Image (cartoon, rainbow, N blue to C red; front, side, top):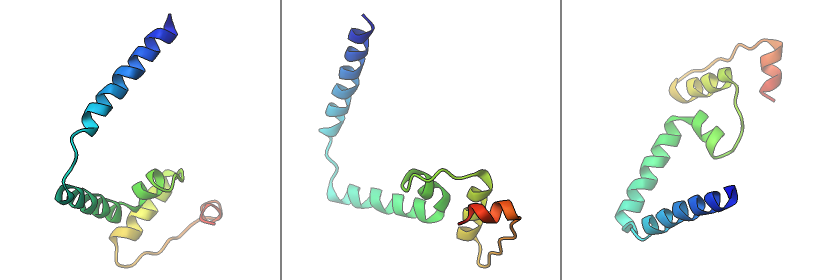
Length: 87
């Protein structure tokens, strides 16, 4: 019984995705989307590392990457434990 429900839910979701795929973007819209994503990832290195590269970051690593991206000069003063995680 549960399998039938899950299968129906899966098919309904995929059917919605199929209908959405029929709305094909023009080349101009694709270019605009690419430019927006590139700009977003260039401004948020920490998000790029987690989503695209698939590397799990600790909170201080998020902050350090954000500082590296948004400041002209960056100095990382790390304790022994933090510096080991940078390798």
